[in-house]
Image (cartoon, rainbow, N blue to C red; front, side, top):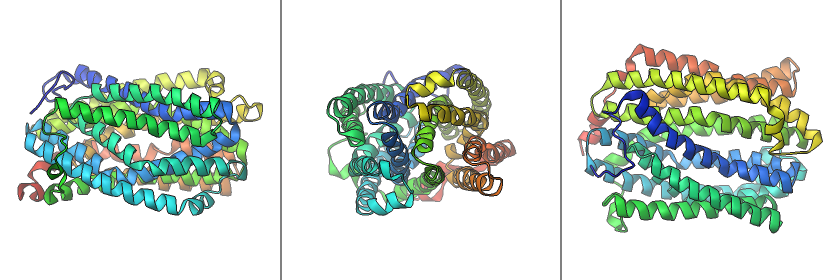
Length: 459
């Protein structure tokens, strides 16, 4: 297997130090990726106001939902690549990369057309406040038109992580984030293009990162990415396996994002101040969750490589170490948010009318850290073995059954208003965390043999 100085062999390194070595660059990369939308929110909040904040927050979830439909191929490809990497199978890696990129490209074109054609009905569906409608339209149109860029960039970085390289995605994200800040200031603060300017800055930044990532892989990983059209012919057995893994993975994040869209539609009914308060609270909590999410990805990749290498006991120990690390992160982030919510909120919006509501929202949403620490890590084992249907079930339970139903119950039945929505969002992952933990300790995941499945062995 082709290697470079950024690749870590997750099947032989010490578990705790290896997991942290792999996850820390990914943590930094995830922080930088989160800063894409966070910088948009900060600059739009400072220079456009509450209407711009409400627009960016609502539309971001729509863009994420649309993206997650098309990113199933890269998610499935990353799982398969991790196991091929553990099995030292270069041919399988290259075949999976080409097939996954082709599927992602097709999906990007289809989703772009659908969102652009139905943009007005989408905005009507989420009941976006009238004051924020024009800003939301411009932001969504630009982001939707550039899904091909986003899909390509995130696909390549997910492939690298599957191979155990978390440093290169960090470098790509760093370049994109610096470019995003500069362009945000140019297109929003200097040239008053509002939320549309923030969207344009994001897409140009991702294009920079995509070009660099492609050139890097072409030079440092010969055969993984080429300009030969033959490489991108869809290999049917591989495509079947990639979609079998990736489609449930896509839908799990789709349901999460759609649940936020639905909850936001409830919040939008309380006016633009409430919508902007949730926008601020969500961004701060998302940043606090990045550490847990990074550990989850590191755990999933390490487990995938060890399962591919025939080391299930080592994969199980990785989960246990990951839970301890994630709980530590959760405690630290919860304490920080509870101690200084005011300064955190003021980074995004100084509107006195929205400040108090944003702080109240943030205090409730920070509860999410504790169930997420268990859920994100335990569910990683199901993704590592290719059982993404179970992972999808847990995310649907989190996003639809708990978040949406509990929000409706607390607001409509118990009359708790916005407090009920905040509490529902904070407690949403709890039930899924319990079920994911039961699956891990049952040991059923040890029985799944992805690389020995009929779809791949037949090829």
